[in-house]
Image 1 (tube, rainbow, N blue to C red):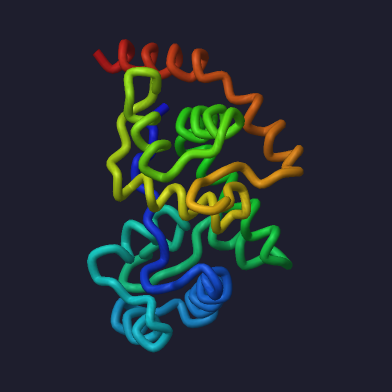
Image 2 (image 1 turned 135 degrees about the horizontal axis):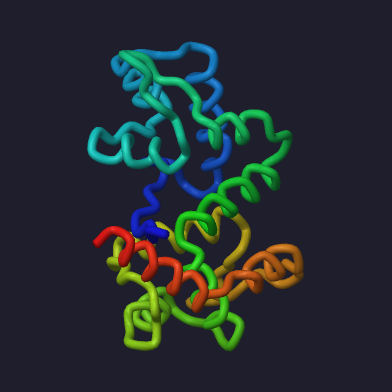
Length: 193
């Protein structure tokens, strides 16, 4: 199973209005089935346009180009159909877990033990202790922000910790068997040879 190492964010949206801007974007794509120009104009009006990043963001959130028009993929459709921000957060969190369960499990295990600054946690996750693929510093900060936006990780002073009372999330993460995933990845690599 490949481990996603890039978790691009919606450009230009701050934490306070992130989910509103994401929902407006998804609603616009669903209603207008825009061309690239129409999409760019909408995103510029919303102050979320970044020519360099929008396609990678769309790939993560599953907004797809079909011919010359954009449409919603499965994940974006689920976000559109969700009724609350809590549902949006859960949908995106589960996508991130699916894309790199090893990163999620190891970060949770570390944060279960103590609080970390972003630099300390990144150094831990890129050390010899971490069994997954190495994630870059900027990509890790994007991943960490997604975790904050999803309500999973919080800032405690200048360090990060897990949000208390996340029993369902903890159960999901505890089911991730890192050793099994690494064995499957090794088998997949052997099959490719």
